Length: 84
Image 1 (cartoon, rainbow, N blue to C red):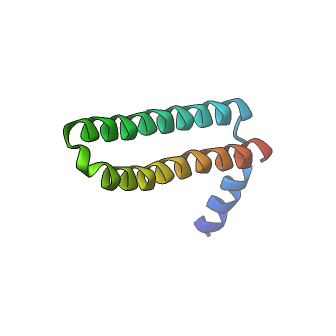
Image 2: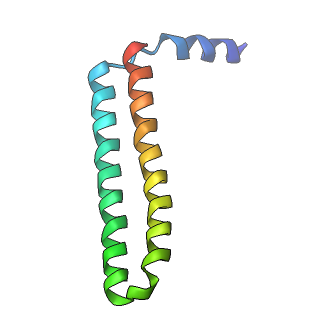
């Protein structure tokens, strides 16, 4: 019986679109900081050991994609929350 009440309560929640925009903004800022830290580490590592540039760049691109996927996830959640 309590499961039905919880399901009905979950449907009744109306998230403010402004709050959703703030949440997306924070996720975009987090992704920007992450990308900056990734490429700063690649530049630093390349300056210290130039022969490892190719390996560092490959790792950086993989990390970059993962961080950007999190930013896109924030964008999708923003649209879901703002249309609800």
